[in-house]
Length: 272
Image (cartoon, rainbow, N blue to C red; front, side, top):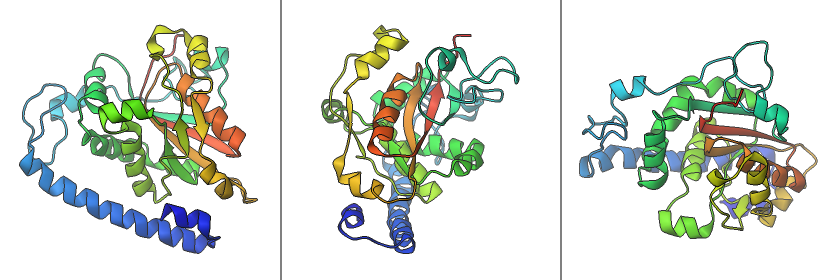
């Protein structure tokens, strides 16, 4: 269906109908997967590793320990700040960001690290459903208020994809697109360079490490050639320094995207 958007100049109503039809098919596949796979492969809690009841993703006791982010937060990236009078965190003041606004769900610390590791490295793909469920529970109105026109994930390099078998950000972004009834473009951004691990660099070095690591997929040029502004919700699993989101945002803005909003499951604490 994606190719049809570029081959024909559909009216907005027809585009919305095709998106809804595609999302309905995706919902049916997800429903079948959620109903039958747990019988064949019982789930274990990613935090305590105990067997889970049918339909659960995490034990209730472990769930309550997850550090949900509350106001006040940085008006740019969404990191918690110390006071409602503080508009921006230190990171956004020291290294101004190009995206419009950021939202996140949990604080990234010792309590959330195991569940994020399970989602990212241990093939716990079903956790995408849990995270989407929590985002709908706590962030749905905020996500809708952004008014994004499409949802896209931060891409991973093909070498990592071959090794891991999936892109955790794409799993999440596809489910969010269904929930928000928006188009999902998983290949709008391409990871062209397999860079060194980010954790060994300081914030500015992280951004330098990511220069030329991403590129815009030219197949979407026609989508952006229309006169109306086009904004996207950029999704990733973890936000720490913001270098990855910033590098992706700059590529998207250069390609003609009008506004970029970002969303992550977990976010690091501000240095102030």
